[in-house]
Image 1 (tube, one colour):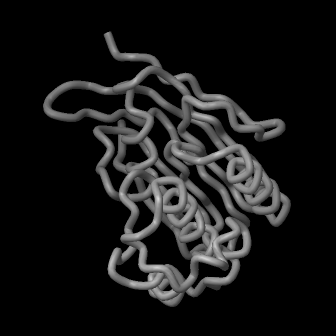
Image 2: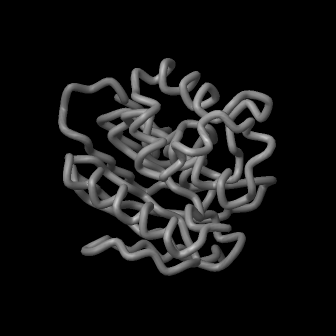
Length: 203
């Protein structure tokens, strides 16, 4: 029998993410079905597939923002999501906007600012940032959260080569510390030894 996802995001166990027979339906239409994988501390997963196949929906289900149609989900560790929703107050200076979430999550604003080289922009209102700078800011929010599991939806969009290298370094450091990273992307991101999940459209 299929069960809905059960979260244990405050567990003292090492980071772990396990999905069993997970399915997603939107608007009465099945988007994907029977998705399953297990990730342990230090693992990374690249989620690939054509537009509309459910990559973003999968990440939002793991984050607890969408209910699965069926299946079972086990999570050990806190989860942080970076997607096309910036989730930062656009009228606040960047550092203060990041600090709001870092204080909520028990994290460290400086971790994100340093990792994505945003220190020089810390006093700039979020609304004045370029598309690439906003993307780096969304990633900095995740890094600053101190979450064990990062969910990154098209994280390299609008970013230049140097910024992508910074992202790759941040991912590598997070994995080395025992974190887990799940990345939905069409673009090439260098993530050594990453598992790959190819989502395919439901018939």
